[in-house]
Length: 282
Image (cartoon, rainbow, N blue to C red; front, top):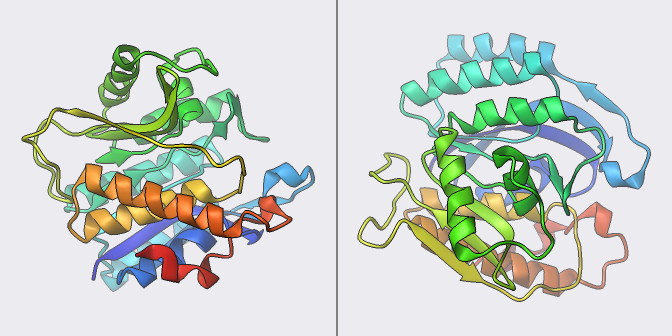
């Protein structure tokens, strides 16, 4: 059992963020903790929302955990709400990483070629800094474009250009990277680039080439929180010993099954009721 810290926002209504990730990681046998970056009334696409940033709470919580000697095997960071908060999280994660903690970064910023409501260009810059600390990052295609300053194109890119985008993510400092919902030569897929050397936190098949591509057929249903579900399954599988490519394929398969099983739910912004679907975790 691994001790996993999630640093992300807590949404009052909707199965997204921590509400989606914690049940999955617990089901996989890990102990989860949380350090909220903000309390959010509901997902932003409802059009009206309230956000209370929790930087001061975070600032006071970290010394308490230090005093109590809490240890984390892995940390996964998500949405940041200010430069001050990002610097605080980066400093804390850098210290944990030096102590042997594996760092996963989900650079949550946007989708469909645009930034989410309330996300500014300055937050893109903050996220580039977080990416530079990570053992593994998993942006979607839109976020990868913003991070690498690559123009977003609905039709996507060639395999060669996609590999170049992965290389640019590595150049930011990340040791390994995955891009979800990528379009490569007319196909929707998840692509990845492993580290060039072993990582202490999870396995990679160094006998294979550095890049991989896994194609899939999209289900025309857009649930909120599926990226968080993908992240949780990916992390859980990695920490349970599967390789990066194996864990990616497992996460893709399970997310597809979850979407297909819940496609008739009327409110897609509310996400997938993950607690009722843990039997699909495999």
